[in-house]
Each structure stands twice: as C-alpha cells, then as structure tokens.
Image 1 (cartoon, rainbow, N blue to C red):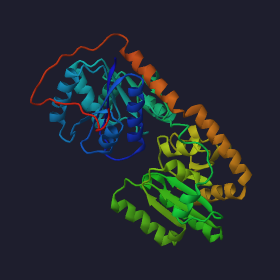
Image 2 (image 1 turned 120 degrees about the vertical axis):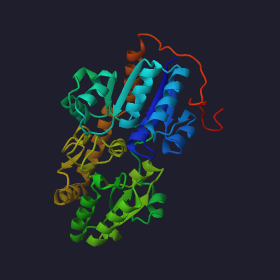
Image 3 (image 1 turned 90 degrees about the vertical axis):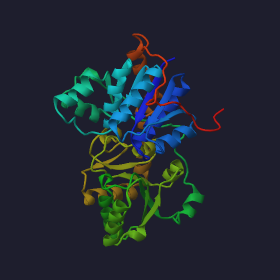
Length: 389
C-alpha cells in the first residue's frame, strides 16, 4: 500500500481546499493510505474528519517546530509520497521529506503566479520536487516560462463529480425561499467575496442592464472573505443603486440546486487559475459569460459554450449577458455545449486517474524506508473523524 500525505496550509473553503479534500477522499477509496496534514481547526481538518479520513493537525505558523514534528512523523509512518498544495507547505514538506527519506515529492500549483526567487525557487520546484501538477494548461505554461522543463510539469485539470452537478429543472422551493420570481431572469456567480473575482464589474453590468429596464436578479453565492472586503463590495453596490437587484446568500452547501436557478452563470474574474465554480456551472449545463483571463479560455470556448469578455469591462460584460438573455435558444445550446465540454475535460474520475497514475509512476522504483520511533517533538497520533466505523 502506498502511503500518501496531502498537505495544505489554507484554512478556509476555497477551490484549492476542495480539490485537496476530493483528491484525498477518492485516492483513499482506491486503496491508498492517505493522511491529510493541515492547520488545526481549519476547514480542511473539519471536512476531512467528516469524510472519515486520517488527519494530522499541524500548526505551520512556526516553521522550525513544524519541520521537526513533520519530519519525525513522516519517518515513523513510512510515507512514500507527499503532495503539497501551497508554497509554505511545499517548502516545509520537501525539507521534512528529505530528512525523513520520503521517496517522492509533488506540488499542485493552483494559481498562475510565476515563480519568485529566481534560482532558489527553480531549485525547490525543479530539483527538490519530482513533479509539478498544474490545474490548467495556462498555469503549466507559466511554470515553463518561469524556467521549469516542460517534462517536469503535468496538467491535471480540476474536475467535478458529473453526476452531482448535472442539468436539472429550477428548484421551485429554493426559488421561493430566496424570494426570486419565476418570470424574472436570474444571473449569478458562485465565488469567494473578493475583488479578484470581479464583483465590482458585475455590479456595474447589473446597473447597465437594469437601467435598460430589464427584469433580472443577480444571485451572489459565497463567503470566505473578511468583513472589510465584504463591506467594500456592499458599498460599491449601494453607490450604484443596485442592491435591490442583488440577492447575496453567503456560503451555501446546496450549490447544485443554486445553479439550477441560473439562466446565465457569470465569472468576471480579474485573474483566475481555472475556477472550480465555473466547472460546476458547466457540468450543470449553464451558458457562461466569463473573462478572458488565466485558465478560463480552456473551459469556455467563445461562442460555443459561452461568451468571453475582457476583464474589468462592465459594458462588454453587460452586452454579453444581454445577448444570452435575449436569445434563450442560443443560451440553451451553449448550456448543452457546456455539459459536453465538462464531460470531455473536467470529469472527476479522469482527474483521479491522472493523479493515481502519476503517484504510481513516481513510487514504482521502490518503497521509501522508515522506522517507528517516539519523540517529544513527534506528532503522536493520526486521527479520523468520529463515527467512521
């Protein structure tokens, strides 16, 4: 049995943490021993326990104590491979893994930020790490442009459960619960409430559309931002006079039902690695209006399953939304094309197949050595959630 550590320092619900958890859960189902290393009391810890996964809460605030604890733990548990998901956990796990004799190191790159630090970063990502997984071809290109050899970076797209996110009729009970009218057009976004997601541009587009006397509501679903950032977005909507056209729900756990309500899904990001919510909307058969940034054009073929517009251009965003609302037949065609493209590129089973194949490739040369030990610095126990019999 291959023992794998998935390590992720993020504390909140994000597309990255959802992918980390999904990888851990599905690899566990396939017979791997998967241990999730994460910050104490984080979203990942709570969710991993709910999924009955092995969990190691490790404070990564202080680097040296965390390095000591993690290296002793990796050796004791005879870990074969570590998959890191962020920069700090990447550096920490590579150093700890080298000390402990871990066989293979993988880094999943979720954002499109180029490598910083010159030769030092290339040494960490290139020499010390066996393979980089990019969640989109765009991110892979950025890594190669940063100096990594093409063979060292593998694209494995973020994907979703296609049976969970599937086309369905509008959930009438949810429609009523949110105070939305069945005869009113509904556009919407599912995303963290940050400026990077383009909310200001979206609100400005809503202003343009409603000034044209269009009957529409904009559904905004998401959380995870600081109160200060939320207040900034709220103030912008108030200054435009569009708050009465916006229904903000906060974080929701019924995203498939939420997506069922939308006539058009909007993702006006200013920067985006790929966008998990975008893929969920595509799998749900929704026409898309999104910005031409990052990995989005890999998912949205302009004119086929959606319309791409420049980032920060509220006029272009409004025109694209209006085009789909005014042409429901075209919107339905694009929705069907979205589902077909999700089935082609963003099937969760294919994602796990790719990760599993990579892990097998990197560990076939033999098992990593390790031995049992106890130490005051060591992580004593690996625990799972309750009621996981």
